[in-house]
Amino acid sequence: MTVNQSESGPHKTGRTFPRIFMKLCHFVPVLLLSTGLLPLLAQQPELPQTPAGKHAAAYFVALKTGSNEAFLEFFSNHIAKGELQKISVEQRAQRHKQMYERTGALKLRQVLESRESFLAILVVTKTGEQLRFEFECEAKEPFGLLGIGVDRAEGESSGTDRKRDNTELVSAVKEYLAQLTKNDEFSGVVLLAQNGKMLFQSAYGYADMEKKIPNQVDTKLNIGSINKSFTALAIRQLATKGKLSSSDLIKKFLPDYPNKEASEKVTIQHLLSMTSGIGDIFGERYESTPKEKLRTLRDFLPLFADQSLEFEPGASRRYSNGGYVVLGLIIEKVSGVDYYTYVRENIFKPAGMTDTDSYEKDAPVANRASGYTVEGLERKSNNASLPARGSSAGGGYSTAQDLLQYTVALDKGIIASPNDDARGGLGIAGGTQGVNACLEWSSKSGYVIVVLSNFDPPIAETIARQIRSWLPGR
Image (cartoon, rainbow, N blue to C red):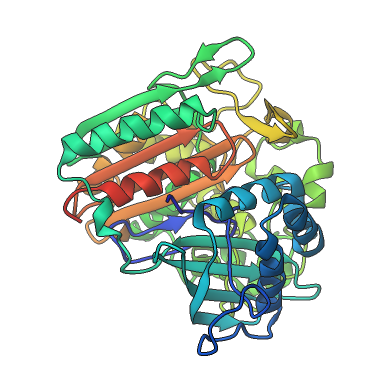
């Protein structure tokens, strides 16, 4: 069974790949337990009566039937309004049903973490595998559900999945990807390397389905929120040069920021850690804004900047694309050049990332893939949902080889300082309609996994998760 689903913001774990899931939007499949789900054993803990716990309980009423209709009803009634504008009820229902078909019935083992708007639990599948499930909802009424995430529980490495060596690993990866492609579940590029040596790289599906142009190993694909890693690195570079400090407030660099409270309370560290309380760029305003007008970072500010903080800075955590747009504006102010120029000159060029940039969607770019999202029973172009240009929060383009080069440049200290945390490894993912990308690198094992797809989430993360479970010698 392959499990690695998420709808919410950053997740960090301490396994082989330190992971920071950074998503431009979000996606689906998941499960949880509640006292109303299955006849659980008497000694099993109960879900808390918090907003997050109540969403979980309702979800498992739907899960009890495993029917598409039950999932449709659940997501229609529980998902926050803004989240439904990112991924439809129909898409969520379909993916959760598929998830249930893979995992089967679950039993609650332990409540790991519980707050009003967040719940993490440990569950056991029918095969005995332990999984961590997370539910996150809005911090204020109506407490709409923001997302559900699931991953293997800490320490549950499923050692029987490991391959004996890289030869056996590559063989398994080839067979796995061939089957996914045959089933029309994957389109994109997959790369696997160790200690800088390429073990496997191959392309699948079409970069342009209408013209039947196949993806190539050097095809440029949208990488979603993987751009946030570049933004965070740029901030660290400027801090190393003494240009800014993590404790600096927004107002120091952006005195005209539309929200005075945020300007006077939110620090750079809050923005980096997504504890600022600043909202998202997606929602009703994004939907009603002509996407062709979103070409500079300042073009994104009206989507969120004047809105009240969702919580006191530092008091909670919520995934925030808006916060990373603000970081990009700070980079522009401090460096004296636009964000796109800064990362191109200070990250991409030194790292040898010659095919990485935030290309405008209406500009002619050779060998760039189009994205395709499922609507009903058909795959359709995602072009209308994309901004005219990506931002410091996500939406740029790269190749699998360039992202490998990124890890090499970090490891060798070419673009990072000696004490940069990113030199110890990365785990980053991004996804929205017709976009899913995953980059995982462990400096300890030397393995790098890159999965880029022009299909909907969670396919790239699902593939990366499966490959990670097969890595030898973990």
